[in-house]
Length: 601
Image 1: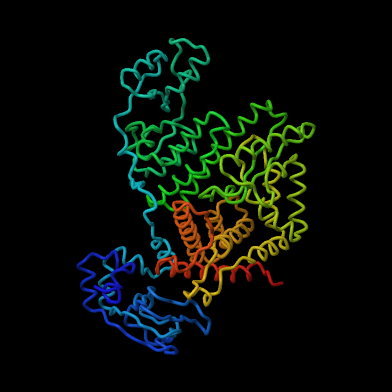
Image 2: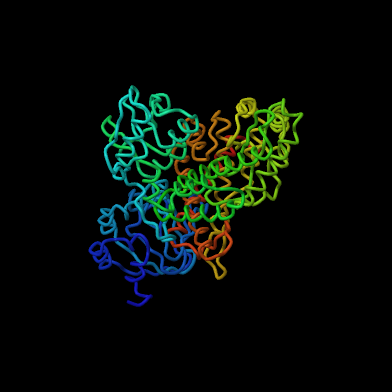
C-alpha cells in the first residue's frame, strides 16, 4: 500500500494500529473518504449528532461551544466520537482549513468498541481518555512485568526458630538452609537477619548463647502476597529494610529479600539503593544522575506511572542525602543542636523524575545560634556533594548554604510572607510552603502551624491564587501544526499551573499533603471544587508528567540536553489530542479557581 492509501494511513493511526487484524479489516471495508471546503459547518450543538467517526488526513477542524473555540483538530486526529458515544451533539464543528477525512460509520465504530484498548482510547470521560492514552516508546530494553505479584518471586517457604533459640542456634539454621534471615515464632512474630548478627551480636561483643529474642526485630514489616513488585519496592525503600515477609491468607508464606527484587531488575530502584549504600566516599558521587536516568527509563519502559517513578526517585535521593549528611557530620563532629534538612520544589513534593536544580534549606534549634558556623559548613559541604552527584546549583540561590538559620528566624519569615503578601513574599511562600523534612530531628510544628493558619488569611490566599494563575496553558487556537511547528513548554504551560493551584486549594483545605495529586485529592475531599473536574485535572497532570519524562529520556539517549519544550510535530496524533485535552481541562480549572478565590477583586 502507498503512504496515500486511506487503509494504510488508518492502520498507522492510533488506536487502529493496535486493533486485531480481523476487526481492522472489517472496519477498512466500510471506510470512505470525504472532502469539505474551509468554512463548512459539519455539525451544530443541539442539532443532529454525527453518524461517523472522522479521522483527519489533511486540513483542520475547529470545535466550538457558545462561539468559543474549544479545540483545533488536525492531521491524524479524530472527531465525532463523543457524538457517537453519547448520541448528542454538544459542539459546533467548523472546517478551519480544506478538509480531507476518512470516515467509519457509527454502527462499525460501536462494534470496534468491543476491543478494550480501542474503547479506552475513545472513552466518554476525559479522565479515562487521558489515563489510557500516553504512549510508552521503547526507551529501554528492560521489559519486566512490574505489576507481577511478589508471591511469584518467593523461592521457598519461611524458616522459623522457637523463641527459646539462641543466636548460635539461629545462625546454624541460617547456614544449613542457605538463607539470610529466620523468623522467630513469638506473638507477634519477629525476624533476625545476618545484619543483626553483625551489628547486634558481633559489634556488641555478645556470645552465641545470647537469646535470639534479645536481638530480633518485631513487629514484622509484611506485604500481602498480591502486592505488585513496584509497590514492594516502595515498601522496602520506605521502611529501610532488606527482608519482607510475604503474607498469603493470613499466614507468612515466605520471605522476600532485596536481593530477590534486585535479580528481577538490575535497573530498578533496589539496584540504585544498593549502589548508594555502597558509596565509599565523595569520589563515588559522579554518575549518580546517570543511574537515576537509567532507572527512570527502565520504569517508563515497564509502563509505570510517572508519579510512581517520581516517588522512587525521591526516596533514592533521600537515601543519598542522608549518606552525604553523615559524611559531613563525620568531618565536622556531632551537631551542636538538633536541626532539619528540608527539601522543597519538586523534591519536596516527591515529584522529581530526573535530577534537577537543588532546592533545599537548613533549620536548626535556637541553642545552635552560637554555633552558626557549624551549620553553615554543613550546608556548604552537603550542597557541594549534591552538586558532585549531579544536582546543579539553583540559579535563584534557594539552597541551604544561603537559606539556613534558627527556627525562630524561619518562623518570622513564614509569618511575614502570610501577613504581608508582596510579590517577593508570594514567590518565596510558593517555594518554601512545599517543604519536606529529609533529615534531622528538629520539630517543625511551628512552621506547620503557620501554614495551617494561612488558610484563614483570605487576602493571602487570594493573592497566592492570583500569582499561581500567571502560568496558563496557551489558547487552543495557537496549538497548531504549521510550517515551523508551534512549540509548547510542558512545565510552564501545563505542569506548573496545576502544581501552583493545587497548593492554594490544599492550604485552604487545611491539608498537610505536599504531593500535587494528593493535594488535588484533598481539595476534592473538602468539596472546594467539582470532583469530576478535579479527577480530569489529576489525570491531565499525570499525562503531562509522563509525556515530559518520556521525551526527556529520549533526549538523554541521544546525548542531548533535556528541555521542557516540545514541538507539536514531535508528538503523535493522539499525544497532540490529549495534550490539547489536558490544557483545556487546566484552563477550565483556572477559570473556576479565579471565581472561587475572587482573584479579580
